[in-house]
Length: 279
Image 1 (tube, helix red, strand yellow):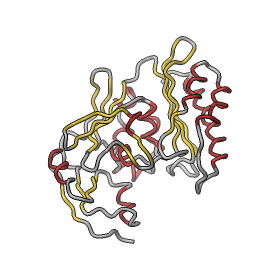
Image 2 (spheres, rainbow, N blue to C red):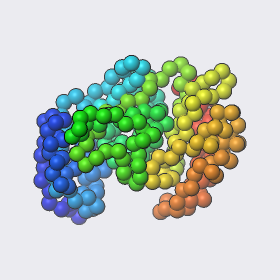
Image 3 (cartoon, rainbow, N blue to C red):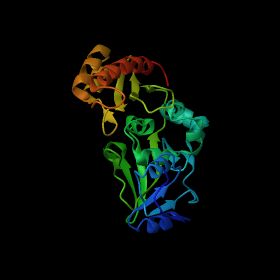
Image 4 (spheres, one colour):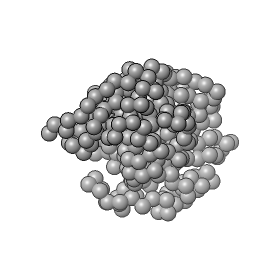
């Protein structure tokens, strides 16, 4: 199938992109690894594609004031191979090889994955687990949104129709940082049936500030807050039992909700072991 007809424009600056998005039905084009597929299946029918690949300043990776900032146009493959990302955001580095396949990672962008907000994708869950934030440019100027407030529903985020996601930012790792990541997929590179991104801080022999974020089990990444509390106390069995209160995954084409809930417990046990080791 071929996409419906649409116009195309190449933005030369952020202001230009925001202005172009004033047209009804306009959509941002970055890596296009999700958008092009939905166009071809006619699940998306934009009137205009606004290509932001020529906008300067959106492809940087930099450490600032105890954080690492990753530009929206940074390709997955670059983040996967970046020594700076590995050192300052090891959870993102650990998740990168699980994203799609090599061809997808060569073109796909971090900003595109966050903006698309597929509930089975790895990066939205990592951003939430790291208590990160999103920089946005829009008609009213720039603003920053915490990850906890960014994901609103199925493919719905805090982005408005004329907004452009410009960067994500997460706290840089320290010697006390602990992270964990695991997912279960039918084939490597497929979307996960269930996945878990986790972050915490070592506090003596226990963990503090535990954040457990599951993906592939709801309309958005889901924090397991009761399990976080139990794991902070060091009781992995209690944390797994708490998932019954935290998670209510629906049946889908990959597995029933009951199977997903069981797999969530399996992943939590694996990730809890990772959290016991330095990042």
